[in-house]
Picture (cartoon, rainbow, N blue to C red):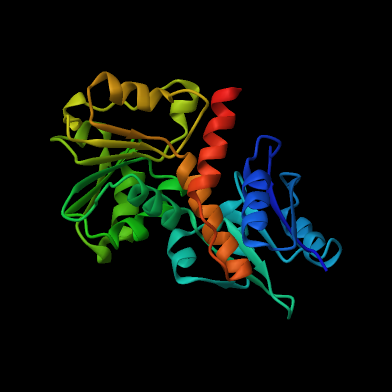
Length: 275
């Protein structure tokens, strides 16, 4: 009996998740089927019910714009999902309940490890204060940076987020104008660079030793990565690896087997360069 899974979003056609999970299934010899399903913006609750009861799915991944809404609809949440205020993975339990988790943060942290980026005793700048930023703060803090500064165009949002996670360590928040000094690791959690925009931050945030990570990815350098390279930072990384790593964590939750991510990342990268 083939177990069925899907990724839902609006829009969803561009999703690389079906390819990633098909590769994982092949590699781990799992009999699953994984598809992309576009869900109408105003009917998430009824769509989840249909996916579970009619299509008999075992689990789903959730992408923009449903992560926060799905968090509210889940019956049970993992600790990390509870703190993230959003979920990207759902398991439909045998008793009909929905268990929600958020694998984005662990996906980011694992990809930083893949690129030999250490956070311990480092100054970290997180750009953005939306759902993407909120989802990664707790996992980032487990790596013991000396400081995490959340910078956002609207200062009050960043400050509120910093307060929410203040129990985890030295976390501050503020507007772009409040950012001073340089940072060891700079993470862009906004989607602005896909529109060709870079945050209005001083270039003093960069040093040659800085690592800049964009949670977004594209076939060529995102605007944020191009901006970082212009200022001679030593390392730039896009979010493709994070996408694969968060998918691997979701796959592990569902199938209790951990796939190898390196080969899948390479296939995706090769495919993007070919296109």
